[in-house]
Length: 185
Image (cartoon, rainbow, N blue to C red; front, side):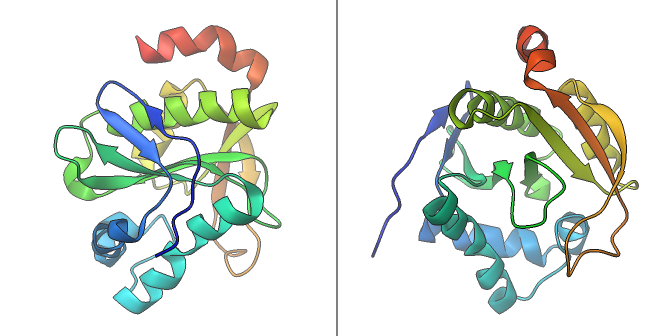
């Protein structure tokens, strides 16, 4: 079975690596959870989740970046995804995140997003990152602000999501560099 090669980021408790076929069952469970999936494309049956899952390996192959799979070091479990994301028509250079519900509330999203933002600035040469967040998603808004991002204004996603109301939070590389130590602390 073909395997993509690329970077692996390591934090205190997590590995961020390219998606693998073995990640799919946990991904399908995440997308099958209505509560978790409501802000990341909506609840999906397994077959639809498979097609969406293939977006990240495809983006890695075509663009050289996409969201990383997040693996909890202590258990080896796939717990979510985080990283750079910029499909055609996207409102900016985004670093996004999503976690399986049973792994929320542990600081994993902050840890993964911090590593992913640093990687995007250092290795992709991005000058800014954004986070496109639906207004009711208060947990992601709080996380974006903990990462040092500020509300920029309303945004628009490309079809088929053009009717989804989003706000854009963001920061520049120049804002991130001095804050990075604060975020990690």
